[in-house]
Length: 196
Image (cartoon, rainbow, N blue to C red; front, side, top):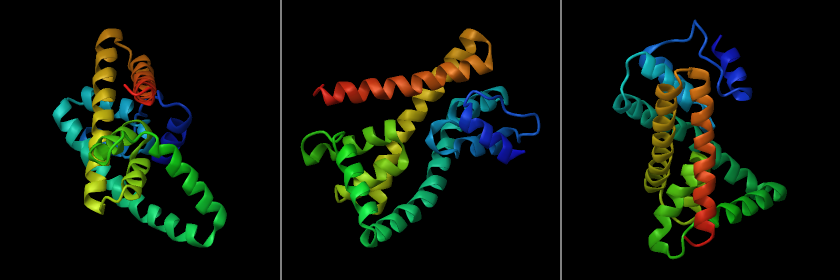
């Protein structure tokens, strides 16, 4: 049942949580552990309807970031090792790093902001890769990356709860919250690219 719902959620992020899905903190944490942010609106709605407040949901999201960091870090290390032996993978990595480095504000003192901005819109593995490319260590890389992702979660939490209260329909609220989570980071990246 969980695997089926996760497959469905990949194609329809507004899909309601099925009847057999775990409730309370465990069900919310499972949804928050879905990479890419698609689990945020349904997790927020489930948590809100189960009586979990924004602070508890924020703590659960922070824990999900730690879980995902423990998953992504070995994957990123494996990709770095493979890139040494596979020229194609090395070229893709170089192009990807060049693309995400453009989000870095000018000057090394603002590198943490660039890392947080990258995580805010693109996600944890991209923030961590940029931090590693900028020479930050393991702990500081993940701290800046998770900080940006937590701001992203705050945006998703606030917009989903607001639309749920305004519209009274969970599916529409999830869709609207997801829309805000896509549009706002894109606008911030565009503003930043123009030197704002």
